[in-house]
Length: 265
Ligand SMILES: [Zn+2]
Image (cartoon, rainbow, N blue to C red):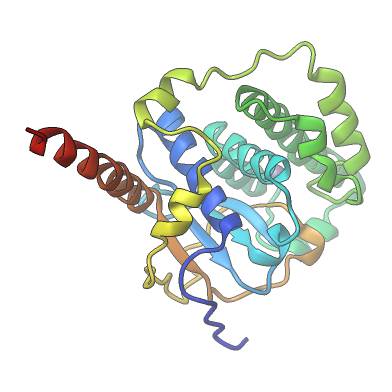
């Protein structure tokens, strides 16, 4: 696979993903950053834990290319559901239990084992959907419209049919309590929707993620039907880098005001 370099700086969609990441990292992981890897020419989205125990989120850029804000919010919230609910570790456990180390192994399972294994995997997806629903409700977004991109997805070994998932999201919406982000948002001093601030601050040289996928463990995949083996040509921006950018933005806005205030008279 050619080593694609995509344009310097992050697109508005990438920035929105990163911003949601900062918010969720602060809310669920005491601000410990989840590494976000944007992967060109890929529709794959998923979460995994590296050998140091760090949380990672892969976002195939083709997957988010045409997504609106509601959909991006649901996608990222669903993925954080996998991370918060420790699904990468559970996936490893289940795969070990069923002796699975490749996609081929999954298909080679005897009928009963395949059915049981698939149920365990699909249940995790539904759990992440409900978790994501509570999150996007807390962000004032619509989970049904947000999850609409699932509608075209067919059933797979790991995933229930998209229409079923959206139907469950819709029917659970009224009984779920929206996640309360008010304190986290005030701690961060930001409101969602200021992607422009980040766009203005997008760094020209982002840290590149090494072409090393041997550390990928227990990937919770979003699109197994397209889960071809893809090398890493993605770029990584860490949550704390976004936090630093945000702090710089706040200071940059506050400094002229402070200067005017103190220099008057
Ligand atoms: Zn998922």
